[in-house]
Image (cartoon, rainbow over all chains, first blue to last red):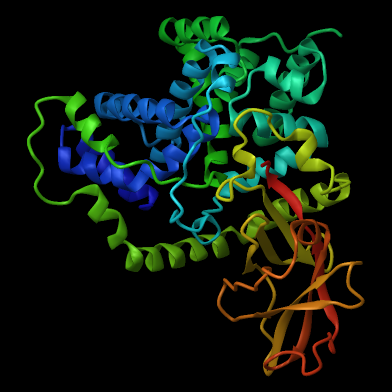
Amino acid sequence: MLSAQELVWLMAAVAKGDRTAFERLYAATRAKLYGVVLRILRRQDLADEVMQETYLKIWNSAGQFDPALASPITWMVAIARNRAIDLVRKKTEVSIEEESDVVEFAADTPDPLAKREMTEELERLLACMAKLDEERRRLVLFAYYHGWSREQLAARFETPVNTIKTWLRRALRDIRECLDA
Amino acid sequence: MTDDTETPDGLAAEYVLGTLSADERAQAEALIRDDPAFARLVRGWERRLGELNVMVQPVEPPAGIWERIQARIGDARPIAAAHPDQVAPAAPERNVVLLSARLGRWRRAAAGLAALAAVLVALVATQLFNPAVLPGALRPKPVDIANAPVNPGRFVAVLQQNAASPAFILTVDVATRTASVRRVAAEQPAGKSYELWLVSDRFPGPRSLGLVGTTEFARPALANYDPATISGATYAVSLEPEGGSPTGAPTGPVLFAGKLVESVPP
């Protein structure tokens, strides 16, 4: 992964239609975005489709990227997650579950521990999440990483869906109040 | 239950988190287009929660996606040089530079460490961690990526004397049994070495995981331990003679210790 500053620079070039920059941007970010969408979609064919749509959108919207508002990778991940979650919500859960297409992972993925980038923003977020009840923190993490709906969370946490909604909203509100403090 | 959370900000937050139904998402997307104030709320949440992507393990996508993206962009000028598959592996020296940049940032972030320590302490304090129960009970039922070796739960421990002085951050990938130790605030005393130990009630005494080097990263092997032991153990750092304990057991004072807590669910 390139540095955030290098990605900002690439993004500016992509906004001007620079295809070489776009290719470098793809090379630098594809594994992160694929990891994000595969976790949510659990099917390689769907993940492939979402990757294509995501990078098309990045190509077309790079001019709207504002480095004052988000880091490039955060912006790109948000696009990818939105595409993946839109897709997974439109499919019934059944059709996803009955699909037996086992996800194949490349074995040579880079070691995430060495590459982890603990940003100050992430530290603050984790500090605020630590103040949540254990169960609510897990709720938020499962929702973020797996893209689960309230209904799916309700089933997994064996809790009524209305309660899940209230817990989610309060947890998110608490996170915001903590971050803004 | 009274609902004091039915606010635009609550909707924006859940939209970004991804928990809305298809209908609610369509509604939120319409609001994003038509209501600049709501769109700002969404951007705020994307910024707040987006940092969580740092914890997601990269997965190399299959070859061929790039060609399809190019085809869909249309009108592609052939780009002779720099196929992405050749760009990526060319990165090792860059990684070194990046790593030191990150370490620099890590040091600069020392002020934020009190907050980080607070998280980890709070996590330790609140988590009744039972590794035998935890993953199974919460593991998703469909195609079980959780069992795939490249998609493990990630654990982190802060090794410290007290909440105000985190000394080392230990990150452990239970599935691959790898660990990284990051020195945060511990001074390197002259002529001494820090040694990392695994303490488990399954063993009569502490097991050495190796020396914590002067560099920020060390890779003590956890390959000989099963996941339940790894996730249930206490990790401790003792001060030993240079080169490590001569006896195989801690001989110096145990200065820092901590337990693992989950940072990314499986």
